[in-house]
View (spheres, rainbow, N blue to C red):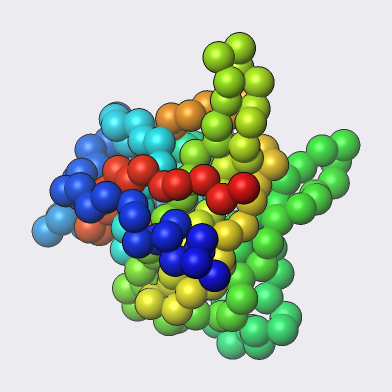
Amino acid sequence: MLAAFLLLSLAPIQDPVPITWQKTDGWVAQDGILSNSGTNPVHLFSNQEFQDSQIHVEFKIPKGSNSGVYVHGRYEVQILDSSGIADKNMSVHDCGAIYERWKDDQGFEGTPPLSNAFAGPDLWNVYDIKFQAPQFDANGGKLKNARFVEVRLNGTIIHKNVEVTGPTRAGFFETESMKGPIVLQGDHGPVSYRNVWVRPLIIPTLD
């Protein structure tokens, strides 16, 4: 319990970094909101790369739509219209899930959210994600898996200390790295984003 407290309390507070995007083709920008216009939109890749970080994303989707937040461009936190699904029935495909990995034409791993905290379609939803990057030795050997220290959806904790052993399905990079961009998925349906920022952290490692 003490270690978990230290993990969250000792991360130094830094100013949040507003995200800028490499390309926004197929998106419409208005009043600080980027909306997928449905005309062959690109995925939104941040110009910045981050290591340990707190990530804030506000999103809105219409009924039946789908998107995702890819931390480091590799590890997806799912966005989906999961309206009306009971907590016990939430899967690795529902809103708030840490998406499954994929090998030999089948999914594996992935973590459903602890509860269904999706506010509903056509409403603004808010992710706050605390993420610890994977760690490597001087030769590139992995010492520690990436970890979602905490994920909140609309203020509700839906993940706590979840490790990911590698990039999730449809991640944009096959190999892992200590730093990576934020990527917002743009090709799975209409979606709007606003107020996306990242606060760099230094998160102590739990052994």
